[in-house]
Length: 76
Image (cartoon, rainbow, N blue to C red; front, side, top):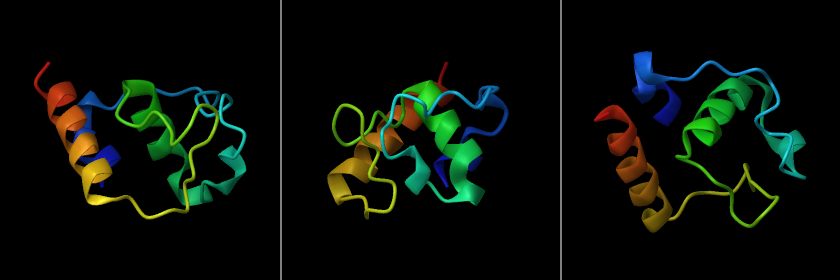
């Protein structure tokens, strides 16, 4: 939902944005571009250094942080 909400503010990606993460292969194929966009904008930074934990459910606090960062990106 977050990548779609970026709309015209979504950055162009080159396919290397997830290379830092050891578990990048756990990102579902349909979600790779969106995940790259939110990582590139700083909306998602990972669970720990080097891991995304893409298959985990986001907590309420994590969702609130993503929404806050999304609104910050959209207001620029």
